[in-house]
Length: 120
View 1 (cartoon, rainbow, N blue to C red):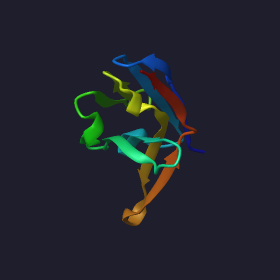
View 2 (view 1 turned 120 degrees about the horizontal axis):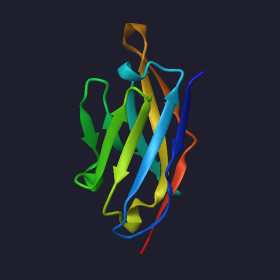
View 3 (view 1 turned 90 degrees about the horizontal axis):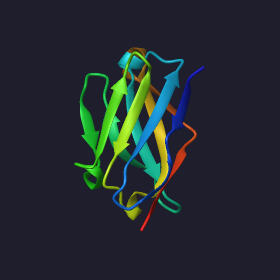
View 4 (view 1 turned 90 degrees about the vertical axis):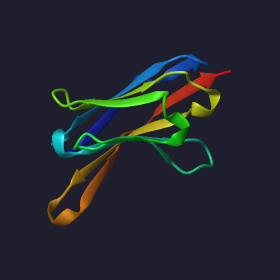
């Protein structure tokens, strides 16, 4: 059974920093692409940062230079370091895993989500 458990969210002032963690279990972490998404009420969930199994990292334009995604394969954990936070970063953040299957398809999993609130 795959589980993604997020932690580290909370309330921070503008300009502050937070680190989100997502501990994964039930998957082969080293071959799984891990990402962070976020969602605000009335809007679609958007990709914030991606850590591919081969080492590639991608970021949304809105967070480039401020957020860093990293992974600790020994602990099957992915992190999102967020700095210079802005009120518009306020959202529920979701951990996402994309596990490759035979034949080139994928199985996707989501964490339960964690609130990040940036006060102005």
